Length: 132
Image 1 (cartoon, rainbow, N blue to C red):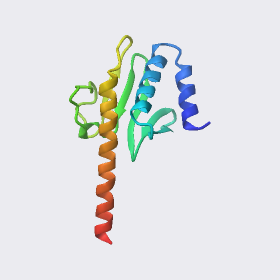
Image 2: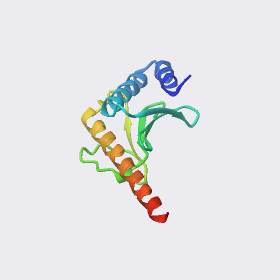
Image 3: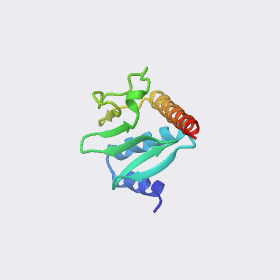
């Protein structure tokens, strides 16, 4: 199976609120960036990438966690992040049963992450060209 099919199965196998939550997150992420790539990593985690990793999702017993790879480098005007705030790189949102997804905040975060990855890639290319 390809990564998108594995994510479909992962969501379908979560027959409680976590599957519905993960499906909402996935739809919002894909709506925010039609060029986003779905991947399947770490023996069972949906990952979304665009010019580098954007976010990874995991269903836990009592929550769904959406972790942004470069979250510490992203603006958070909506105060979207509520977990992993002490780290130097990763930031996350923990969603529990009954929580609502702030779709606007999530889309803004996806856009910021794509822009950050693109700028980081451009800096790497400039550095590479300067060395040659």
